[in-house]
Length: 267
Image 1: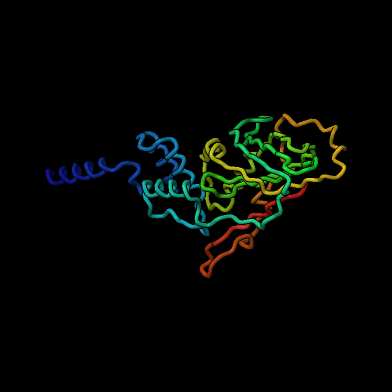
Image 2 (image 1 turned 90 degrees about the horizontal axis):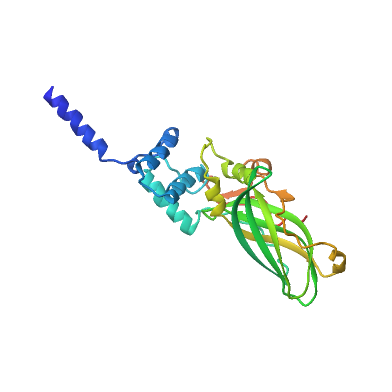
C-alpha cells in the first residue's frame, strides 16, 4: 500500500512539473489545450495567437507538420514564421505597374460594415507623371501574419488625379472571404481564428492598376471618394482552386510554390 502511494505521489509530482506548453499537440485535444494555455497564463495574447495561427495554417502539402511537437515547439515555429514568412510562398506572374503612379498603402485595422467584419485599408495614389491621369481600377494582394497570401481584391475606381497631386482612397476586404481562404484545404475545422488579430497583422500590396491620360476631363464629375469601397472582385480559394494544379510540387508531392490566381484583375 505504501509503495502504491509513493508511486502515485511520484506520478503527481511529475505531472505537476509540466505545463500546458510541454504538452504534445493532438488535433482532437487542441481546443482544450488552447484554453489551458490561457488559464495558466504561460503565454502572452500575441504568443497564443501565433500558436493558433501555426495550427490554422498547417497543411499536408506545405512546409510543416505538427504531429509530435510540443506547444513550446509550435510557439517557436510561429515566431520564426512571423519574422521570416512561410517556407512555401505564393507567387504571381509579374504585371506592369504604371510608371506615372505611386501608391502608399496603410492597414487601418478591423471594422464592421453592414454588420459584416471587414479589413479596412487606405491607398494614397500620387500622379508622378507630366500629364493628368485617370485611375481606372486597382487590384490589391493581402498577406497574413506569416507573409502568406490570403486574399486578392479588385476595385473599379475611375478617379482623376492631376499632375503632382494625390488621391487618398478607402477600401474594404470582406473578412468572410478571408476566413474561407484561410480554412481552404484543412482536413478539420477550427473554432477560433482570431480574425481581428489576423486583420490587424496583415499587409497589403498593390497587385496592379490601370490608368489613362486620354480624355481625362470626362472624369471631372467624379468626386473624390471619401467612403470605404467594397471590392468588385474577391478571389475565393474554394471556388477558384481545384485539385493540385495551382501549386508546383516536388517528386514527393510537397508544394514548392503556390499560385493562387492572378496578381491583377482588370475591372
